[in-house]
Length: 247
Image (cartoon, rainbow, N blue to C red; front, side, top):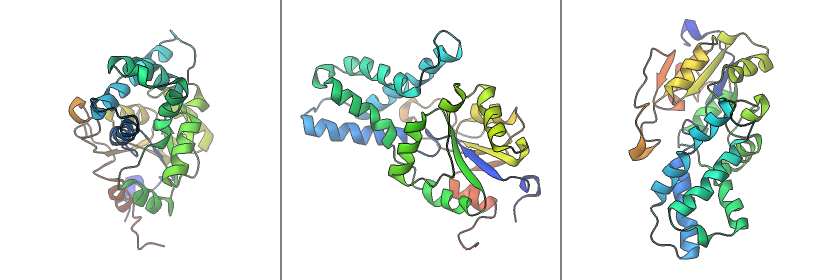
């Protein structure tokens, strides 16, 4: 049975990058595929993926600080791409059209193996959606391609703010018209859950200790007593009494 302290939960909102999707493995695989077609043989695409992602937080920070007006994450990704193509010595290999296409790698991320089975189980009983810093087109395209069974999408575009800004969580609560304790934030990042809990939301931590590979320096385990601590989305579904045998 569902734990009594979670019996009021009606909706689960998910962080996407790293929690639902394997961005590092996906970017690495797509980079290697492009490299094969172009005959590029001297790039470590796992390092490329990690370097690309390393521009994500600094890019958002400029927006969050007010140093830059609202800017979609797709623009931040593209600006970082131009930098790392130079850093890896392959900028001359890619035309403008190819860079535009390459930037869409983030729209085609693969989910972790447990994501879709777990989400399908949860969907039987709860409303499920991303609450993500991704753009609306990014999240929609990723869901369409991968078959992520969202009921709806909460994108940073809707709030013109990035997590961990309180307005993102408060905005989602307002859109749903639910009480904060009726909504559970699910993430592989402790600070995301801290921000959600501060607004009264329930919390579920998923351990993804290999998200960043050799660059991982945090989120190796739960840092607080979250409402659920799990290794997979399937574990969360089982904790919330959404077994595959339930109708």
